[in-house]
Image 1 (cartoon, rainbow, N blue to C red):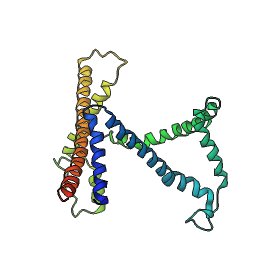
Image 2 (image 1 turned 30 degrees about the vertical axis):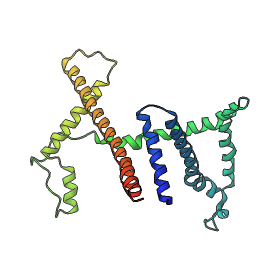
Image 3 (image 1 turned 60 degrees about the vertical axis):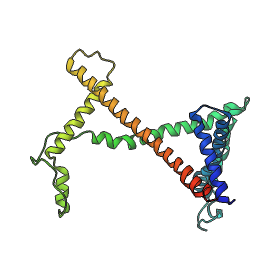
Image 4 (image 1 turned 60 degrees about the horizontal axis):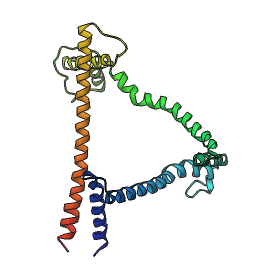
Length: 244
């Protein structure tokens, strides 16, 4: 039996071991769960060194002495201070000196918290700006014309124009956005039927959105299942077992 056969057979056993959770949690499942977690931990440590520590800490610190670097590259030896500081975080498992772990952990949390402000704006800034859309058309043509053969100036002017179809789409978008935002105003007791209707519409819009996200998640799980079943039946069973 070839190396390919044993490799695929082990992959099939791992597949059935993890999918056995659909029946119940057994020792067979726990064996492959622990095997997967151990491999993931080892792989994570290797990735941490090759993609983070080595290029961003070791190579700049060693400078020209690092393998594959420019001979004129200076070394920033002061970065060696980061090693004992980061190692202090593992003292959290020591009962007597556990307080020392608060120093690097607090520094990392502070740096991370400060960066999240910029990360949040980079992620949500453009969608927030895009939510401000014009609802009045500037051209009375129903649809946006094609850009074939247009000059750059004409394309720029076309991007600034609002056609009827775009205005209708923007009205729907802004209306749904206002209804959803109205639903999240919990500190005020609405007495107006119109505002209550907006909040109800916003709740239904959220439910439709969550349903679409859930459906996408289910389809992703089915895509993973189909891929594993293709591996079991086509690559392993038909490709190896039937040809033995």
